[in-house]
Image 1 (tube, rainbow, N blue to C red):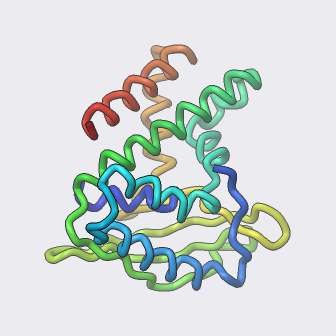
Image 2: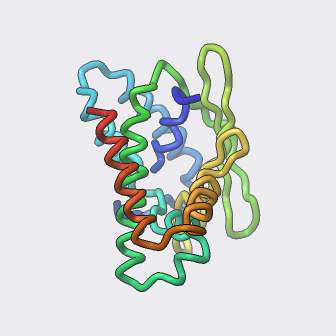
Image 3: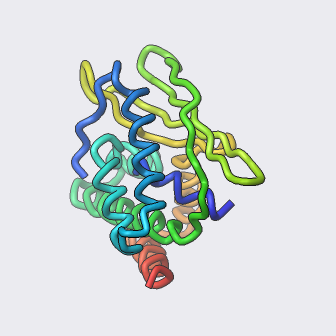
Length: 197
């Protein structure tokens, strides 16, 4: 499973969104480019995460993902705390992604279909393929404005990335305040970065 998880973060910046009618073609193209980057031996290992972030950062809604992950607790934070949480959350996501690149081993990601979930949501179905197993993914989009959409969550094997974080934060918040949550995020990020080094 660890060899597959890195692809959760390929779509994970200032977000500008994708025009609705171009979502399917954009993801098909960028999935292909991402695999080319990973297989390109001329790109240094430490440079590959930066190239992937450059490719995908623009249409991932980090801000909404952070809010959804902390759930009701987010609304209880003051603006400075909200900004700090989002900063640490994004840093943790990117550090986790960079660490998981080390598990890459010739997987491919294939576009399956895109369809409306309801009038305000669009889902792109894909599959990660390796030699022994296939792993279904769902990239969930919401409207950023009248014409553009952003990714706000990813499901792998039926498990929501946002809900996984939310469960962790809910458990932690029962016995810890905001400062401890930030500290735990910082420590987890540091651990990811140390592993990469």
